[in-house]
Length: 342
Ligand code: SPD
Image (cartoon, rainbow, N blue to C red; front, side, top):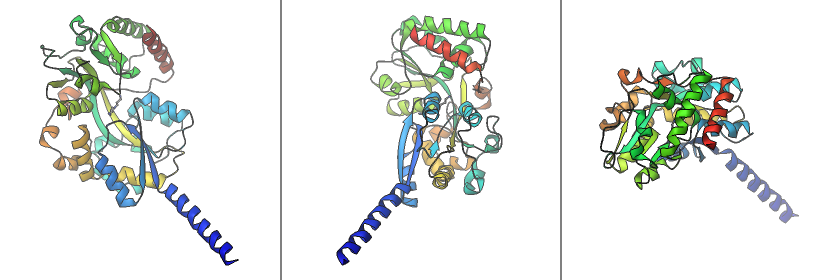
């Protein structure tokens, strides 16, 4: 009898400890190379939890995953226009600002964005632009235009992001249109231009760009500034430029899906990232700007003074945020598929 009671007690303890271990996990879904692992480790130690980390390569991949019914994510990192789409689709939880004391660290310009007025569902994580990264030892000229992607000299060694809005965005900018243009004739013009470009394209790629540049397979890559600076940090032969025609400007955000299993812990994680000293470490690791002025005292001088990472007004003026295109998204999706199939 005693033996039986003891086994029941032991089994209960085992089940309880397993389930509480399960509760003490936070599932984060982010872009790759977009956090300082030490900051995640500090969070795990501080709250005695395990952070399970998964990555995606485009906003559309993130959306498809959540629309496909993915259940377990607690913190996700959509960009501006994708936050707008996710709010519209009722995917995001309301944030509890009382659980985010460091919201006050965010530059007020980022607290009331048009895609999420009042930061009700998302908080700004980083901002920056796309542009062109290139190998200065083999590309002798100074690159300052998207036109470089149509230069036959670089045929077969050019990467464009595998990202519909970014690719049409660059073609629109090159043609002198807005990145949010919704004129079907302009979309056709951009598509034809991009079809011509395929002759010089190595591939559409958003994940392996760093390796392909560093191993010299690619000479030029359409890339986001911070990622390109991670490459430059490894090999100073590379450079980055924001083309004179302008580029896509983005704010990447942190948000909590409505079906997140650990919402309170998710708020704690977001608040941890917003702490100025933590944000400073993140910036030093990922080479992206964060809108947290007090973090700058912890940021390396070469990063905080670089105009491609913290773009000054004259660069920002020629760049544009992507916005949700609503029903026109389906038209662009079709043009994107046609382009990819050519
Ligand atoms: N490695 C992190 C890349 C994050 C890029 N932000 C995406 C902006 C999309 N318009």
